[in-house]
Amino acid sequence: MGIAEHSVVAFRIFGDDLVPSEVTKLLGHEPTAAHSKGHVRIGPKTGNRYIEKTGRWSLSAEDKRPEDVPAQIVDILSKLTQDLTIWEQLRSKYTMDLFCGVFMGSSNDGLEFSPELLGKISERGIMLGLDIYDHSDD
Image 1 (cartoon, helix red, strand yellow):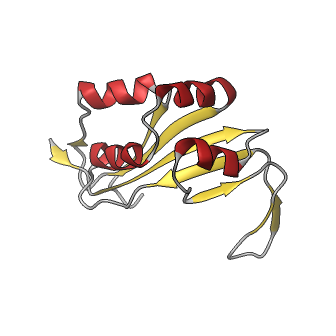
Image 2 (cartoon, rainbow, N blue to C red):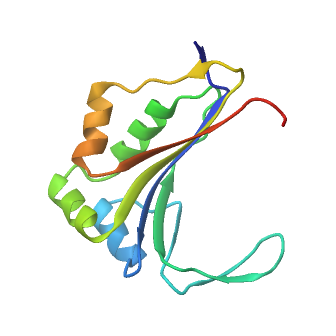
């Protein structure tokens, strides 16, 4: 089994009543991107106006080539509070996930997660999502 070509990872929090500055204070780190529900965003390519349907706070890891999703997740979690009572507070109010985009370089690439890393994700109440993209040009 080979290692995938590259990966992108972002920790995301969503909620209608999410106030980005409050989440930043709780987690102890500035987000990569954040907005409140109702925020008007202008599309960078089209100039179209979009009204955000829910609040969002996200922190992205540096893209990795070759793929290293576990290291990207560790990097993100190491920047955020280790206080599990804060994570419980966030989990009770918002939806949280780790978006992981994995771009394959062949037809049989793979990735593995240690039990310790899966435990850290689980104890914080974070859903792990893997979007795996085929290497073909189709």
